[in-house]
Length: 524
Image (cartoon, rainbow, N blue to C red; front, top):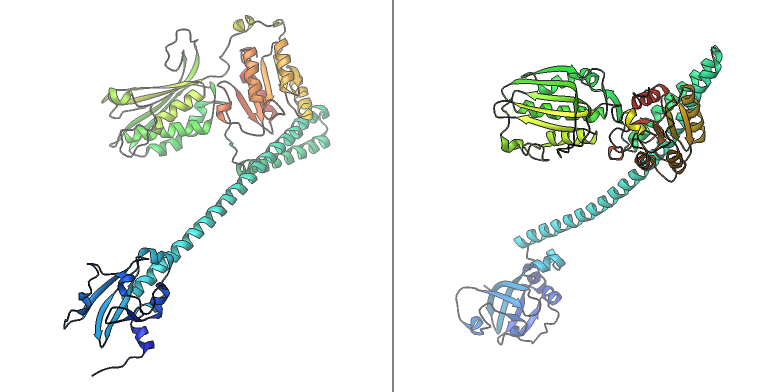
C-alpha cells in the first residue's frame, strides 16, 4: 500500500532529505540543506558537492538490494557530513538523511533543534553541548567580572590602608605632642589640684585618642609588635602556662630561669613563636612522652655567625636553651637541621630551627644545636644583653673632640615637629641630660661630626632623610653611639640594626627615660 506524504511532513520527519533523479542529479532538496549548502542547485550532480567514504561509485545507488542502503556523504567544501538511508523510487532516489555535526559546527552554533528529526538523540546532545557552552561562556564572563571587581577591591583596600597609615602616623605625632606638654604642665603647676585635674583630663583624652590610632594602624596593616628591651626570664615566666599547653600532657616541661633581670632588645611575639616551634619539634621527637627543659642564663661569648674570627670581641648574651630527651639526630641530619624546609618528618616543614636561627641573628645574636642519637637535642639561642657594646675606655680612643670631663649624658635629639622637639628637649634637660636639638637629619649629622654624643634619639619619618638612614650614617661617624628610634609607624625589623631601640608614638615619658637609661648603663 502506497502512502503519500506531503513536503511539510517530509521535512519534519527528515529535515535533511533530498531527491535525486536516475542520473544522481538533485531534483529537490530540503530547506535545511539549502541553508547549509547554498551552492547546491537543482540539476547539479550529487558528486560535485559530496563524496562517498569508499569512493564515488554510481553503482552503489543502482545495485538492486531488498534492504535499505545506508549512505554517508561528506561535503567537498565544508567537511559537513550527512548520514541516512537510500530509498529507491520511480525515476530516482529519495535520501532520508540527518546532519552529522562536527565539533566546529557546534562551536559555531550552526544548527537548530528543528533541523533534526523528532526523538533524534543528537538533539539532546546538541542541547547539552550548547547548554555547556553557554554555561562556560557565562562562567568565563563572571570570572572576568569577579577578577575585575576583586582587583578594584584590592586597590581600594590598599588606598584605604595607606590613608589609615598616614592618619595614624600624624595622629600619633599630635598625641605625642599633647602628652609631652601635659608632662611639662605637670612639672610647672606643682600641687594645684584644679590644674592637675585639667591636665589629667587632657592626658586621659589623649590616651583615648591613642586607642583610636591603634585601630587605624591595624586597618593599615601596620605592625604593632615593637623591638623593646625586656627581661626574657620575665617573658617566659609570664607565658609558662601557655607553653605547657603546647607540649601536651604526655610531656613534662621544666623551666629553669637563670637570666635574672638581664634585658635584651627583642620582639616578644616572635620569641614566643620561636619557643612554640621548638617545643613542637621536641614534642614530635618524643611520641611516647619525655621531658623538655627551658633554661636561661647569662653567658660571655664571642659570636661571629660561624666564621671563627679570632678578632670577634667578647660580650654578654642571654642564652635560651631548649633541651629534650627525644631520639636525637644523626650527624647527617644535624648538618642540615638549620636548612629552611628540611625535615625528617613526611609532613614536616622544617621551619622551627630555621626560624629560630633567623630570628636570633636578626636580634644581633645567633643560634646553635647539639644532638646525638639516643641523647636528645639542645637548641641554644643567644640574645645580646643591652648596654654591653662599648666601654668608656674604647669611646675615649675615638677621633673626636670628646670633652670627657663632663658628667652629663649627651643626647642628639632629632624631631621635625617643633612643638614635640621643644617639649622633649625641656623634659630631657629637666632629667639632667645635655641635649642638642635638630629639626633635620642634615643638621644632626653636622652636629654629630663636631661633637661626641652618647645617644641619638631620632624620629623615623621626616622630610628628606629618614631616621633609620640618619642612624646608620651617625653610627659610622661615632661607632659608640646608642640609637633610639621613635615613630607613629612601627618599622620593619630589617630597618633596625641589632642594638638599636625603638619606641612608638605617642610616647610615654617614663618608658622613654627607661630606654635612655638602658641605652647608656655605663654612663648612668
